[in-house]
Length: 288
Image (cartoon, one colour):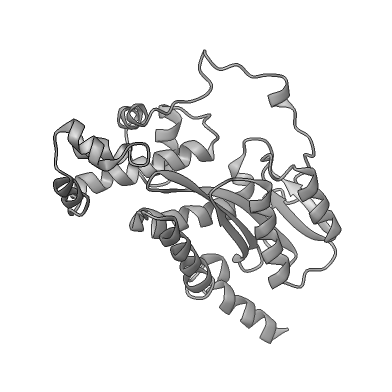
């Protein structure tokens, strides 16, 4: 489809030039952009986003068979062939093929901490156990990166940061918000995966200066951070895939409303006896 090809290269070449080369009109292209999407087309769009998100979540290590299994287990049934076709169209493939070589340096894991949680996601009070992670959000033609901090007592998101680059600053900004919002004491466990951002020395020093105990998941084991994985899954199903944001500002506004208004204050959580995180904490405070 000529119009789809133009969309793919917007930002690289002028729209007028691409329309002229492909023999279509600009007005026709813009009408096509505003057209209603068919159910089949929307399913394809949603699946492309899910494939991109899952592919990045597993750091390009999964090919079509594993991606198809991962998506199916999350409730998005799909065949290996369908996933492989969409991956080929997007030019993405697993980095574990014959052409990929791991260097000694890539296997170095500095600043790795023990897993203090061991999947014990229950907390007896606020600010006893926090967990943090990063997820990817595709907006039109680029990635946004969302770092969040969750208090496991109520599953409330106490800190978050959204940016166009996945850096140490991203996770530190999320943690700064969490410390600003909460009165944490010595001994707070902060759990994450082993991502390079979470192993950065200045980030480690920042947590240590705030009297935190650092905990990390085992290598390649996403279930060691299951509550955060569950939150990201809900966020994408209930917001990102449904809205299909086309601008960064739209995405930022949507994420703010979802976290601060809907998830923390309205959404009922099974781990909270059917109460929202804020309501659960208020009930616990009144009972104390």
